[in-house]
Image (cartoon, rainbow, N blue to C red):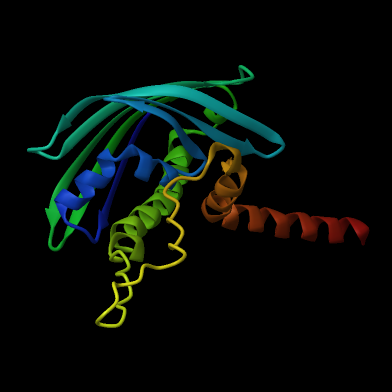
Length: 222
């Protein structure tokens, strides 16, 4: 199925391009994902998905087939499968970055193929769910591009008396984590993501059906 997304981040094209190409920094922004290795244009990782009582863990690999800095265009292909054999996923993704005022507009086209339990959702629902997940990704990406971690200068040593050398801090500040360790990888709760979308899309119909059922039940009791 074909999915299209677009969003704007409040950072320059060059800064956004650098972040998108820094997989170690950007991977934690994908819900449920963890990067396990990067070698040149090739990478590997895992995605944990929770769908009601069913837990899936996809392990897969991917590769960048294009990274054109002149046009800020990137294309990559990725594929993976659930470790219990409950399904597979494959994606071909093309992302294009363009200036948008003081920010950057990002257009993403995805050719997605899935099998197993997630395949029960149609294209429309998959688009809505991916839109919701993209919102989480964009919030994370924006924070990394504009947050304090991107701007805080290194602490300067404290100045000592004129006749003594400057003293150094006794305890250096702890480094900010850039990626959660695999052991703390949080699964993407697809059920919690899907149900609000279903309620928004079909809620009025479901509510109307519930009212009808209650009326019929009351009449039968009479």
